Length: 214
Image 1 (cartoon, rainbow, N blue to C red):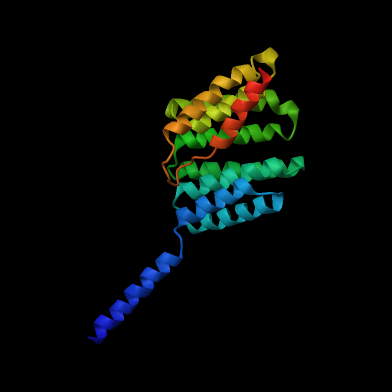
Image 2: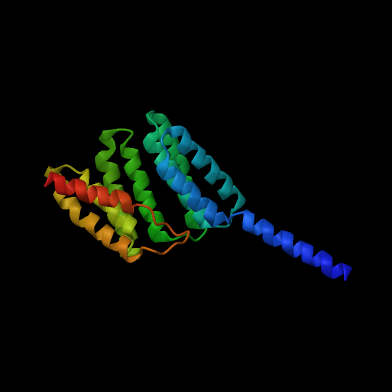
């Protein structure tokens, strides 16, 4: 009877603890949500720090490394100092490499690598031709690996949007890519998982922006 009572108490506390403590996936998704809502660079840095701790605690999973790289790229867009931007992106590059080594989704990681290349352009516009070309190559790989990758189509649209019209870019040329991205987002809507799913809101914004510029 005493043994049964002790076992019952342990089961109760185990269940209570698991009810109180969210899963790693839930914490990641919550942190990414805060990242998207961050009002300043300090809030972004806090999200990066939390994802660093999660990645350190989950060294065999590719997803924490993916989101850590993503958060660093987002941080780089908030940073004003060019050298610091590059240093942040250097770290993100290592995170992407580690995520790839852990067997991560190659389509998503190639798309994220393209996003990183686009971040490099923010440091100096002279880099535009080099890094937009590298981003285009990475996105081509991402789409070949998974034609339904919404983030790859969105980022391809961004690449085209920011390319001068004289070189085949601009809003009109970018719009079909954004529309394709939205189509892919809508087909995968309602699926809640740790798999990357960011980008739908900004895709809608870019479609509206392209429409205004036509």
